[in-house]
Image: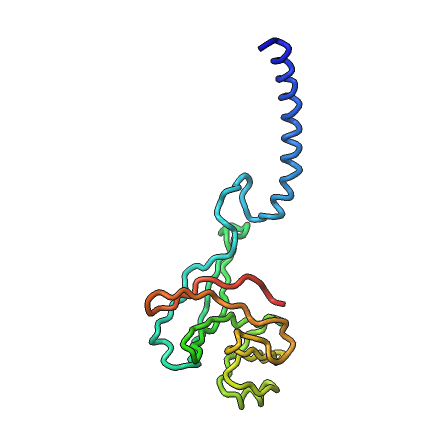
Length: 188
């Protein structure tokens, strides 16, 4: 290598370092916007998505007949910048055994404005209290009278709710049903 080539290479390196630092500072706000709860320079760390503290578990014996509905409380941890490093939220839910034998679980938080809805097994009671006569058991919100048909994947059949309630993911292991996570989303 000649002296001129080495000198040229050193000048190129000296000019590229400030450019690299400038681009690093320019992309830092974008990175912080996309991944706000990551620590600086933690590019390959674990996901900062909400996670269950522990699964809620039911067994076959908890559901003796179709349309058995069991209320439960699901605890989910959200990563936060606070002294604890996380915030724990308790999300109320219902686990229901359908006539075909499947067990489904839904959040009890109404997607309209966040009220807590009820399980109504009797269609006559739903007709009186919620101004809608369903064919079978439903979820019904007392605040604004939204009604969700459980047999049709929580479909909104009456009221102002914009969509069905969020579903919980259930993992079946042997004769037990483990509620392990909640569908992403929020109110409305």
